[in-house]
Length: 323
Image (cartoon, one colour):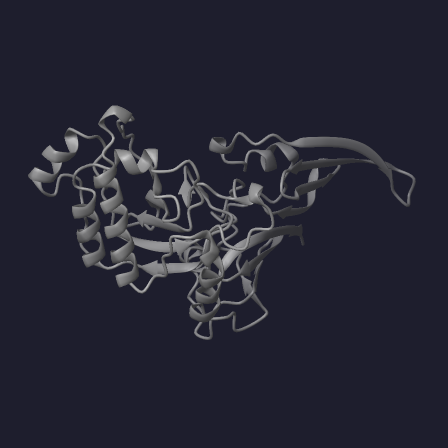
């Protein structure tokens, strides 16, 4: 697929300079659209962006749908006059259901677009800095409303459900269940010594805490206790926990078990909660299974066993145990 770059058409550039950020502002190879923020257990679990600074939305579902060249051409035309109003939003609410992630030739995210058709608002993340105007005196409602209306049309033209009311959430879930193939097998184990070569044989609490992505500024709780062994020797037990039940257990300075649910924890092998099965298999260099993705992928390395659990082809839990 050919690359799309900034300043493809000079007239687009001239129009956008007066009103702010021109989309897209980075070079990319392809893009996928995902659904997220569906069937949340509580409002606090809502994700504001599908992807930002190395972290995926925890509520992202599935492997995504590849967008066509025609879609990108139409999006550039829709956003040619700038998207400042849409970034500011036409209402105060915001719960995006659609997220588009743009990838480079190495399959790394370089740009994301999160869209709320219910509130007529979008949010942008880009690996390159961008500026937009928040001058409400120049706010063009008519332009913004037409942009969202046109975006809704081209989204639906790609056979992607898009609704303008929160009451339509069940329709999104129906689409997810009917259009995403179910996991074909419950569990698969792979010899993954090569994939786990960057995971240290001995992991202490400082190494584990360094897996937290710096953009998240994660605050952790830490407790230390002593545990008497059967031989009467006192062992030092340490527990490091982040929110969302992400817990690391250590005995005498060595990791004994970890359960990770937080998307801000990035393992040395490149895995993090929120990644799609397709992205993870691609990153690990593992062939896509002919019979479909399993619910659980076990990676058997030299020193560690790593269990990766998926729901709707999205990684939702990572568990580490020493061999």
